[in-house]
Image 1: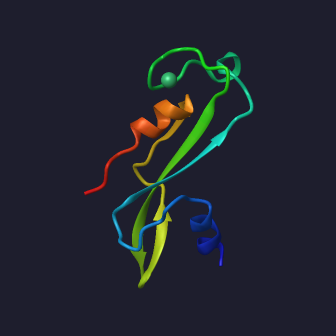
Image 2: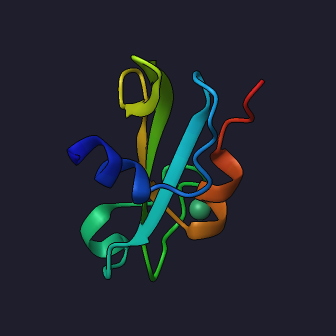
Length: 87
Ligand SMILES: [Zn+2]
C-alpha cells in the first residue's frame, strides 16, 4: 500500500499517533544552491533536507501526515538538534 511505503522512509516510526517523525537526506549540494542553514544561518558545504511528519491513527493503522509539519534545509547536526521532542 502506498501509505506503508511512505512510512518505511521515516526513521523510528512509533506506533502511537501524534508523534513527530523525521527523515534526513543529503541534497548533494552546498549553500551556494540552497542558501544558508536555516538553523544557524551559516554556510554549509553539504546541505541536508529534513522532512518532518506526524503519525496519526488511520482506522487502526498508523499513517503519517505532513499537516503543520516543516521541511528544513541545513547542516545535518543543526537539523538533528532542531527536531521536536514528542510528549
Ligand atoms: Zn547549521
